[in-house]
Amino acid sequence: MNTSVPWNFLPHGWRLAAAAVSLTLVCGCAALGPVISPQPNLVYSLAEARDTPMPALAHAALTAPTLIVSPPHAAAGFDSPRMLYLRQADQIEHFAHSEWIDTPARMLAPRIVSAVESSGAFRAVVQTPSAAAGEMRLDTEILRLQHEFLSAPSRVRFTLRAYLVESETRRVIASRVFDAAVPAASEDAYGGVAAANRAVQTVLESLSAFCAAAAGSAPMEK
Image 1 (cartoon, rainbow, N blue to C red):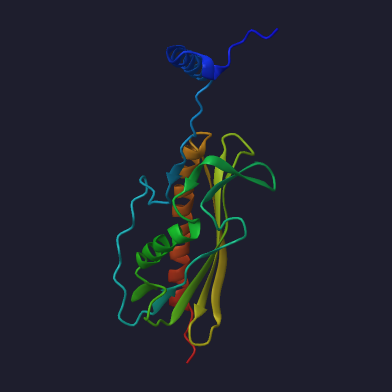
Image 2: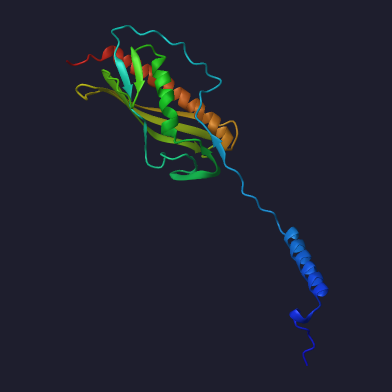
C-alpha cells in the first residue's frame, strides 16, 4: 500500500520547507565541487630590446636613394599570433595561454623601418602602403620565430630572409638570410619573449648594415 502523499496535497508551509531543504542540499553539493575558472591569456609584443640602445640616427646625403619597405611576409605556420615552441625537432606546438598581441610580421614592420633608417644610408625609408616612390625596395619574409626546448637552456631562434630590389627594373640587387638564436633566461613563455626581442634586435642590426652596404655599392640602372 502506497502511503506517500502527493506533493500538491501537502500543506503550503510544508511545501516551502521541503523546497528550502532541497535548495540547501543542491547548493551544499555545488560548494563541495571544484571551482574551475579559465586561465586568462597573457599577451606579449615584439618591442625594442631594453638592454640594447638604438644607434644614433645618421643623416643621409641628398643623393642617397629612397627605400620602400614592403610589409613583411611570414612562412606557413608563422603568420598568426600564436607563440610557437619545439620540444622535438620539426614538431611545432604553441603555448596554450600566451600569445603575441599581433602577428610577428605586423609587429616587425615598424622595427624594420626604424632599424634601416638609423643606418643613414637612405634619404628616406618609407613603409608601404604609401604614395611615395623610391629607387629601392626591401622585401622580407619571416622564416621562423620559435622557442626551442631542444637543449638547456632553451633558446629562441629568429630567421629572416631579405631581398633588396631595384624598383624601376625589379632587379634583385642583393639577398641574404639572417639568423639569430638567443638563450632564454627562463624556461617559459616570458623568458622566450625577452629572448625573442634580443634575437630580433640582432637580426635587424645585421639587416640595417646589409641594406646600407647594398645601397652604397649597387649602381642603379637607368
